Length: 181
Image 1 (cartoon, rainbow, N blue to C red):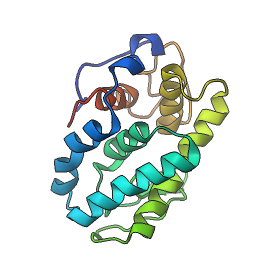
Image 2 (cartoon, rainbow, N blue to C red):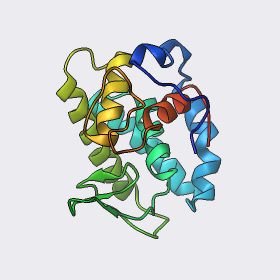
Image 3 (spheres, rainbow, N blue to C red):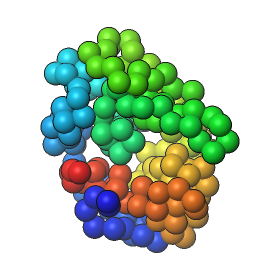
Image 4 (cartoon, helix red, strand yellow):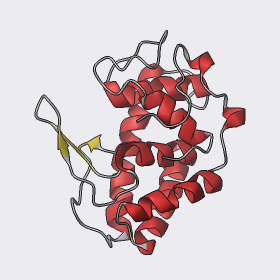
């Protein structure tokens, strides 16, 4: 089910960064969803710390990282690892290729949670690098989100999932503006 209004077309049709909420607001409105997913208070605090640490280390915006986490796993540190059609596994908070996962477990250590955020952010940063240019522009972030979800990019319509979730970029964009599931 899409979150908020469905944005489609090129990146210019999606919310500008000036409409994005700050990290603390985005994190706060999503905490309940994390708890509903089964996270402990310590898990939630560790997710926040991990996102801020990894954002500082990689230069990827913390608010983008937390929105990917919410879109991919609802912030559930014990989310199941999935198997793609090619047999590869995507796991962890950001459901990223090569990420450690802790299916069904909660009350994880800071190291375990940070390792999942590092793996997913590394994957997303690779998508940004694949695009090139200004990694901090909304346009490039939206393009990288499309690549993160589907591995392919139709710049003329970011809601063309090319076999993946059509509303993915729109849903993350709405989360960036403060919408919640």
